[in-house]
Length: 203
Image (tube, rainbow, N blue to C red; front, side, top):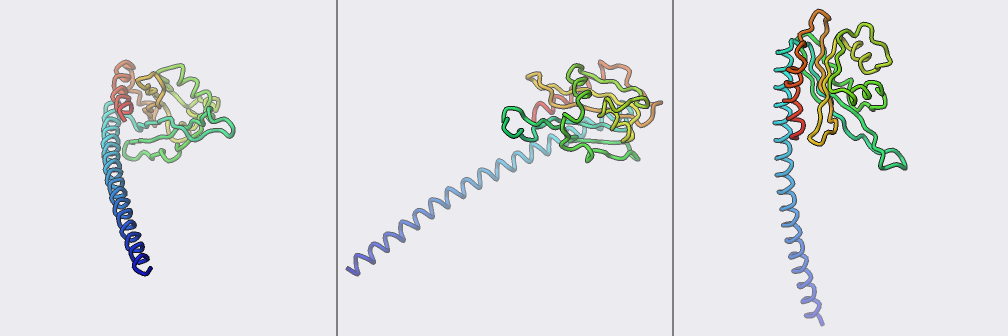
């Protein structure tokens, strides 16, 4: 009787060791694979951010801008009881400014698009928005109005389109002084924006 119990106990211990070894091996492989994926994703994101920054710095220098901003649309969540109607938000993901100009990127994070209906409508219906003089802008265009009060006196905004014709976001070229209006060739300006659009479509 005692020998049978010892045998059963021994077999149970062996089974546990086998199960633990197999589980540990599976866990180790899972961790290894996911660590590689995370490392690979982080490298891709780092390269993307660096490329975007370099393109924006080039754009700032070429058009003598005081500020370049990249906004991207994203899904915040779903409305209660309506999972098909997504809450769309927009955030400034990248910004570069001229020396002495204050960055405002942190003021434009996870903004509900419903906050700026007129601006969104204009962006949807036009590839390019030209605010040559913000001094007379009113709060009907609440987004441009906010940008004016954040130190911008003129703006050039171009939307970014996906390969499937969806709006992914937009690029802002901003000026703090009205006497600086170097954007005259809008076709050339659009071509320069396309380089940023290409990178956003790749990520």
